[in-house]
Image (cartoon, rainbow, N blue to C red; front, side, top):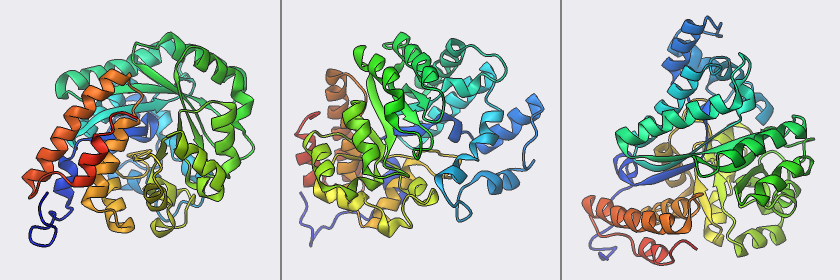
Length: 372
């Protein structure tokens, strides 16, 4: 490796971060449409929106300083879901999401959504899943981006609905669906109420990730892990409130799907300086950086990594490690993941070398650990 004094690492720029291969493991389809697509779909479907221009609609649904809580944040989905009730719209939204991710060199994407939220016009759940998968596969053929689907149960809905969604996920195992999630507001809607759905998922050896510790305390994370067997945790910003649980997740290498900009907007943390990503990373937790909702949060994978650099002090070496941890945490079969990691590590070395030096030593050390 180059001498850090005589030959320093290149500056972390948007161009460099965009060039790095990346993952986005926590990305909601209904929160990640293109702004103009929302407007076009609304016009075609005669759906009334809070604004009819890109600027006006952005002001209405981009969650910045006006957002006061997770519940407030979730109201923006009323707009996007209104136009995602047709097969054509779902396929288009999935296709464009994957295309946009590929444009910033996201190599592996996991798209999550709840089919039950797209049945207002009578679409069958299987039709909904097929439409999303078709959009993703078309994007893959055009760009090479690999993508899979995570089906979401909704915490505040009847647990029987979650069982129906779990059955759907099981039916599509090996056909593009790689996991099951519980999403929605945590407080007052404990994950244990949906244990029958989760047990069906686990009985069929499907991956589980659960939104937990975003707007509720570490007991929510404990339920996700100990009651529901979660293989990953969505957000987990409040994990730091329980040292024992934090060490348990660390010891068992249970990844956290962190979404810094979204966490600030929902009030899960007051600002970037208070975000636990830096502490978790330094402590050795398996952390990943994700978008959550590209449209509603007005972000991208590149932007989120730049937030980690500019607001939390992540160096280029740290960012390379974050990137590798994203690929290690993917819901992919072990051998596929190992092959992908070899390709990714070679590409990271090439990108960093192209911008000035050989791959950071810490990234090389991280890659040597395989998929574990």
